[in-house]
Image 1 (tube, helix red, strand yellow):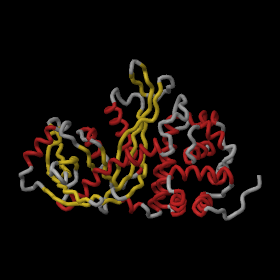
Image 2 (cartoon, one colour):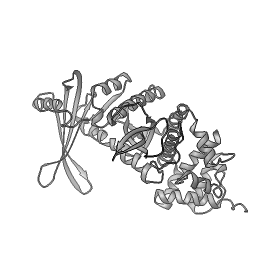
Image 3 (cartoon, one colour):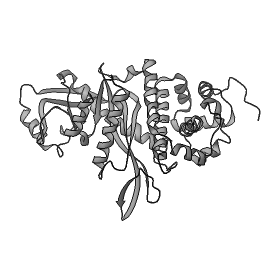
Image 4 (cartoon, helix red, strand yellow):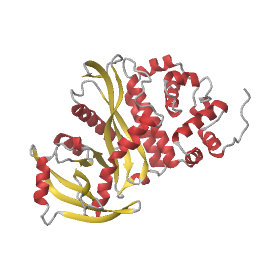
Length: 401
């Protein structure tokens, strides 16, 4: 079991495009020592073994790696405003087919054809000033979660929040989500887990809320902040508005929230170029409005730096490595995220990894160099491997044969 799981993780860490390609590569790649594998299974064996794995213990690996960051005192670069950890949550597609299906597949009809598909909801640790993101938990959207996209994501997100709080009972979290999350039941769910929130809100979806905002703009407790901020060589004029103690909507008048809105103005016309709005349970001071609008906007890191990277930077998130009949699709997506998490931690904290990256300049070239070195030489550890890539030379002669 350990060899199978580590071999599958090696498949994603070496960025093999398919399980069959990985089987072919293992004839040449010397992965046993750096990955501590006794024997690599065939692609058929790997699929069969992984399909029956209980995914719950596998989820603990995310918390284990997070605790390593804590013990290494590396989490401080993600600490926001000296008190919160920003957790961005969103969903993404993983698999879709009109032929292949399993017990957990969602089903929909598109273009007159029945489709089977998998989606996941992910929670990642983000920060406005930190490029790397840290996946905290991944929850599959399963058959039975609902009949429409919103219900499916909400039910899976509810399980995700429960998992997050169970794994990190004392972590002070500020949850970042889009406008679909700013509804009464979901906010109640966040509050039940003792999580703060900063959730997107749009006028079209929250008409009653925005009517209250317009009425409240003249109140004494309405906090406004105007700034000129640098954007490259240009300066952008911005305004931040904050209104406290509003009703979320007509259906939840007793649910009181605070409202934050950010404007950016066109330098030539003076008209509004961008507008972003959020609801929150935080009581923000006037001097902190710009700081927290930046927090709200870095929710996009879960889409840009997470899902887009997984789809376009060698991880092949949407490729069907194997579907199985039970848990294979879920096991493989968890291993994909774990491989991404390992890379993100190394990029944020490992000098050798960054020295290797600096030499090859791009991630895709680093993956190519990693495979090339493993193909031609034998390494006892990743430290030796990254040192060889970074320096362009080997500390020991290559093995014979």
